[in-house]
Image (cartoon, rainbow, N blue to C red; front, side, top):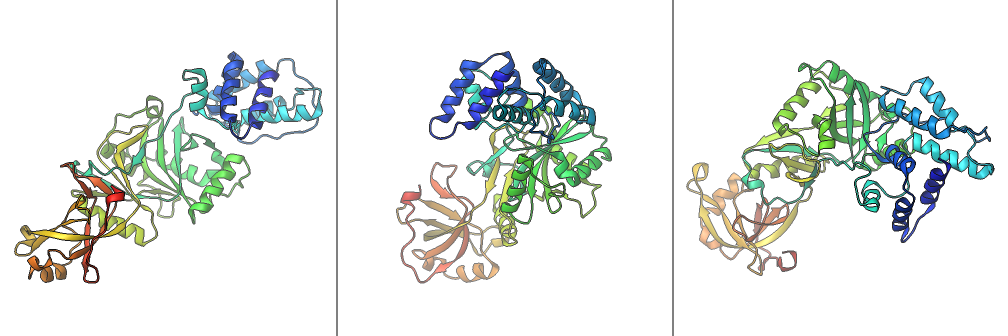
Length: 445
């Protein structure tokens, strides 16, 4: 086992240009059953040792001729243990107190490597993707969470839009397995659950007292937030490094927006649609007190894309980051077009080329404008953003407005359903009497 620890020490020290390829070459050329097993312990997110901190004695200890056998036996017991009890911790401490080299400096460094392996804090600068690439096969599971895109091209065809607040924090999942909670970042680095004890208590309470009688292993998907993004990121880094205080989660909130069966992470996709997951999540969290540090993410059910803008503005105006719009899809462990994020609002000036009559509540008024940019390649139909006063004023002599410049707010440029370049969620702001030429989108298309 000493040879494998020396290899980890060498890879840990490699930095700079070309270091990742060197590490891949070292893994490939030194691969053996022991190294494969240690790699799995270090980087497999489905293996949890429950050892987040160990007491490290830098004094030279006695050698252990059975170091590999004791290591393997301990890890296998830790895998199935609900938690790391004093007996298991004691065995782990004894293991890292065993002499691994006659050289004092090397001995301390190798035992430090062993401690990082047992506590799953070993960082060699490359993850599962590059490790698997070096071997030409999946040596380490490389799961992912469901991620949003910013491609809004299909959203107008959705029957229903489920618009959720987008939180500016750190993405975290809380895995509820056999009555215990484990936390992982988006990159599937494990977080010490003892540093998130308040959140853990709330999640366990919710699952145990769920009105639905939910059973099995699940994971909560959400965002850890704090006073600001910088502070929560710093606190998560402290937890990952093992330097966090026990009350570090005092001002944290866990904003939960999804709940899915744990098997989804290994399968790569779930079977429950969004509405089923949301209703289950609402039921599970329904018995939490108002001051709980676990919070159900805000959600609005919409029938039309034009309503997204007002929700977005409401959230941004109070300091929020934006929204994520979802359809009634299953949970996919990848970047998916079923989740669309909106994080930006832009303004532009377009030339009015025509207008169309209103219908329904707008009968007798204009329904909106046809506009284009200076190049004529960006063509936009604008039907929202008008106040009642706007409609009364603009409908008096609408033909006189042709050629005028309209100030327009939008999210991003898109390709519409006819294949033309357009804007997503364009909203009328005002008529620009101070401007004669529209903006040119040639370099933005």
